[in-house]
Length: 354
Image 1 (tube, rainbow, N blue to C red):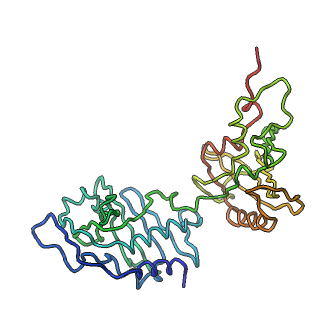
Image 2 (tube, one colour):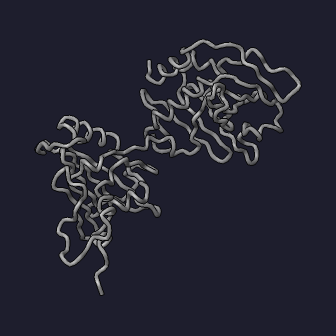
């Protein structure tokens, strides 16, 4: 059985429903007592294995996340891998929701809870549809406001309404739904701590800058071939070059074939004390800077002691993982990461005295 399915089934089967829950509604009609305290969407327990796509829809956009074998991908981003954590949080969150309080059945009051139909003018709601292989809805639910600390016993709650149903609920639990497509991408490209980095070399416009450390115990990076008559503007900015690959997350992604990389493209090379080499190449398109990455492990790297260094075997696995993930893709990065990886020598030095 697929790992995601096991997670959902495990959560759904954790515990039986507790005692009765006292509720109130803002209608004169009695609340639907049969569902109080129970899981709102028990069908997820029996149909988890049938979920093949997730459709996220809001008033001005919609997109899908699709299962392909053991992974989830984003078709609108050329099937780039979706974040497994984002998918898991959504499916588990929906499966755990319990009916806490029956709210309105009047459409005029839905906007107050943000559970109005997503095609309503000025709608703030978001609709999540879990579909089978034929595109049929297993569950379609409108997610509204969250009520932190209102889910019973100090827990969280969220307003929800099943699509096509008039009854809105305050449900016990939390549902994490990113409304933006990029929020569903598997955003982490690499994470190379500054403590591991021996040197970073930036090559662009026939210029070259190298910042380096001689040993792992050195706190700061130094500029190689530092001009004798110049001073460093800020050691923080020099160290930022050395830490450019820490928690490196994408802002957007495209197939690398869509970007005009060339042999003359600016390049940044990062080398660690434990033998990891990562090369980033840069190109411009549509007013943005895009980067592609390649990694390799240096089998001749000499062992160096250091708290955060890795074994030769682990470095090889790390390089392979980066290549498997990043191969064939170009990434738009946060501006501060691009700046760190494309610094020039003059950017790091104080101005010459008049």
